[in-house]
Image 1: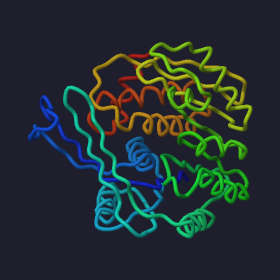
Image 2 (image 1 turned 90 degrees about the vertical axis):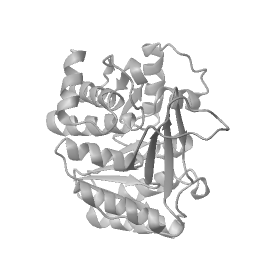
Image 3 (image 1 turned 180 degrees about the vertical axis):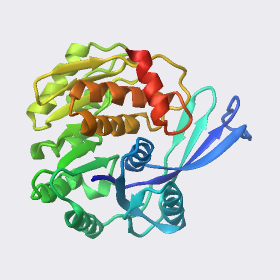
Image 4 (image 1 turned 30 degrees about the vertical axis):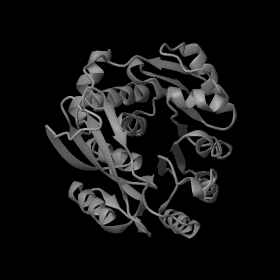
Length: 305
């Protein structure tokens, strides 16, 4: 089974505003409301790929109840913990540029985190995947994901995937996660590099290997419209170019990449095929307003061959 963990799920309010003017009254050309949060997005994509998952995390207040209602509509299994506060609403404005305004989210205590860990302990068995994705509240500290994995590593044969920023990610490496997926800018932040608009894939792979030496079994570095670099535990260094297309919405592309990789890896046990499909999934998400279907991903992948 695949379990996704989202500390801070959301209601995402997408607004299209023609020629947004700061300091003025603007009216929407279109709008839609969806559930969001990295782990939730991954579960949504896995569902479209025909894979079952269980979504876990924390919800709070009336917005949290709406998140659960919306997830119920998709048929995704879930086991969220209700906490204090209010789940966040994120506003995504599409105009001449994309503007995101993300809310703070629910109030999560260390005791709540212990409840989540206990839930996972009850569920997990050998061969399962746990995908811990997104950021956690800063007041919980940079070891919160590492502490969860430390407890769950006692169950043999569980595979961990981590997608987070900075020390929240790097502190998990000593527990040898199956996969981590920093993007290029996150990689630069970790190593104090100057980000550029062009990528030297050899340099990206070199720094990905440094993360591997710290414990990560496999590392994917997403490069946006330029594709992705991967270093594998079988000593491969892989690069896949992304398909070209019209950017519609960049939100969720990295989440679809992770879902696509896990889906294809479980099907083929092949790193290159999995990276190729993952890159197609990320691109397909960017080319559509919603989480892409399997058919949309297959079409984008056909453009990459």
